[in-house]
Image 1 (tube, rainbow, N blue to C red):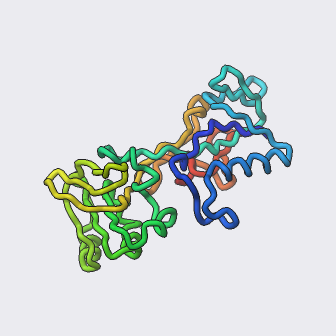
Image 2: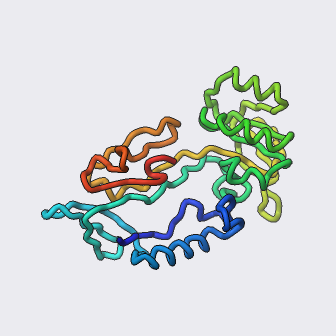
Image 3: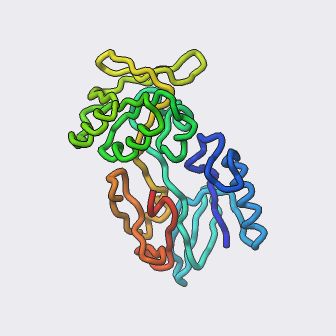
Length: 250
């Protein structure tokens, strides 16, 4: 078994991780190092490389072409290359992504409890974690960005819970002299002071190497992106090719 790893994990902006029993607070790259040692201890090989294309050979095997110009020939292929988060096109979000800009109340909620949290709603699914963020702090505001359509009854529930709901386009995220989040500035001129901003990202799965094999894709129920279609055992529409992880479920 050969693992081809381009070394570009989705959580690259994160300095440490939580909720991995026995590894609380560990930097993600240290967990990766442990995992590589464990894989190698069972005879697996880790290849630091980028797969650019997978093609079927005349004898039914697969040729995995690498960016270096080399290739690996395999009997089976497992796509577990994850996804890329697509951030809202708002000035300042990319620079603060993974620090003061967060997306998950389970991943980051404990760290921002009792702080000023502003959630920018760019898609109806953004309302899903809003109730969890509200439970973390009394100082919670929601911005319905750029005319996003939401359920009025759901918004009334948040208003009754003391949440400030603002219908306006976000102009930018303002930072202090140390580069830390200071406020969310709206196109109306209003300024919402904030210690953390919550967003919902759209996503693109890393399935490009399998394009030539015609692997089927389908829209995820959230409407935030497409995923690889698999059967009950992880098989894709291309015989001999399997998929697992975030490429099949974000």
